[in-house]
Length: 603
Image (cartoon, rainbow, N blue to C red):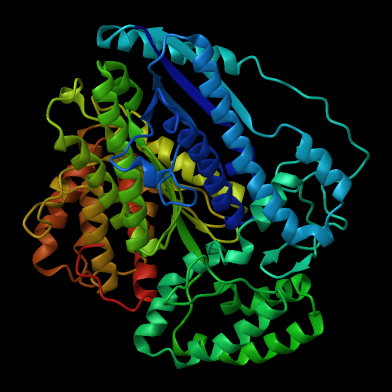
C-alpha cells in the first residue's frame, strides 16, 4: 500500500508576527500563528490514518491542546497511511477548517471586547475576507527507501503552490489604513484613543481586523506582554530591590489607579520585581499616560504625585538609560541536516529534538529575566536585559548542541547542527520595527563567513546601536567554555572575554576612557602602509596604554599583554576590533552596575 507525505504551510507570517507597534502586538501575533498552526496539527493528529512528523513530541495529545506552552511552527509535515488521494485531500481540508475555526475564536473574542469602538460593517467585511493563508501539497511513497525522495518532492510541490497565490480584490472608501502594516483599512470608529480596559490604543492609531485581534484578544485574561522599557529597566529595578524597595512599593497604588483609567498595563504574568509597565519610572513619558487615558485630568493628578516618588528613587539609585538586548538565534545548516535524514523514524526524532529545544529555550530566556517573543524549532526571538543577554546566548547555544548529542546514530552525525546567536543592544525608544531589524542584522553577522577558513556559522555577534552614533559590532565563532581563570584570554570564547572585561570595568581595574583611547590609536594609524615595523609600533602603542599605573590589572597583567600581542597585528582594524570588544563590555557593565551586583568574571 502506498503512503502520502502531506506538507502544510500557514500564514501570513508578516501580518501575524512582523507587523507590530507594541511588544504585545509582536508577542501575540507569534502566539496567534502558533495557535492556528496547532489547531491544524491537532486536526491531522486526530485523523484515523494520519500521523504527524513535524511537530512531534512524546505527548502530542497534551501539547496540541489550545493554549498549551508547546509552540508549533507554521510548517507541518505528516504521513498519511492511505493510498487514496481523495483521503489526503480531506485531511488537508479538515486541517484548514480547524485553522480557520481557531482564528475565528480570536476574532470573536476581540469583537466582544471592542464592540462599542468599531465599525461593525467594516469588521464583517474583513471577517469574510480570507486572511489565513493555507497551502498544502502531498506526494506518494511506498516505503522507507522512498521517503527521502518523497520529502524532497513534497517540498518542491509546496514551494510551487505558494507561488500561485490567491489574490482577492479589496474595496476601500478612503478610510485610513492600519498603522501596523498599511495593508487593510481601519475598522475603528475613531482612530485611536479607545478607552477599553486592558486595551491600549493611542490617539491617531488605526487598526484593521488583524491589528485589533492582536491588540485586544486575551486582554481580559491579563495577557499583556512586558514593554521594551520594562525589560530595559529591569537591571535598575533589581538594583533598587537589593537596596530596599519601600519607595518602589509606594508606586503600586498609583499604578493601580492608572490601570483603572486605562493609562497603564500590567505584565503578562505577575512579575515579582515590578508587575507594571516600567515606563511609569520615567517622568518624561507621563504625557503619554494622559493622552491614552479615559480621564486625562485625573491621570495628570496621579502622575504629579508619582513624580515625587520617582525622583526619590532616582536620587536613591541613579537610573540607567533604557537600553535593552534583542536576541535572535537560528540553527546552522538545518536544511542540510534534514536533507540527509533517511527514514521517517529519524525525521520524527529530528522534530522531537527541535521541539524539546523550543521548550527549553523559553525556560532559559525567562531564567535570564528575558521575554520570549517566539521559540519554534531552531528559531528564537527574545528581549533581554543587557546584563543577562550574553549568559542567555551561551546557555541557548550549549543546550542546542547538547540535545543533538543525546542520539548517536544521526545520518548527519559528522556535522551536527549548531546555533548562531545575534544580540543587538539598542535604545528602548527606537521603533519596534527597527529593534527587530537590528536583531536580525546581528543574527546575520553571527552566521557570516569571514576571511578565516571554516569560520562561518556557529557564531556569536553583538552589535551596539547607541543613539546618534555609528554601529559597533564584534563577532566570533563559539568556543568550548574553558576555566576563565586558568586560560589565556586568547583561548577563551568571546562571551568569556566579555565577562573578563566587564569584571575589570566593574572593579575599576580599567578606566572608562581606555576603550576610547584605543579607538584614537586606531584612527591615528589609518592609511599607514602595512609591514612588520608597523605591526610592532601598533603593539607597543597599545601595550603602552595597558602599562599605565591607573590600570590595576595585578596578576592578570601578563594575560592581557599576551592577548594584546595576539590580536594587534596586520592593520589598524585589529586595534579597532579590540576597542569595540572593550566598548561592548563597558556597555554591558553599566547594566551590571545598575543591578547593584559585583561581577566575578562570569556574566
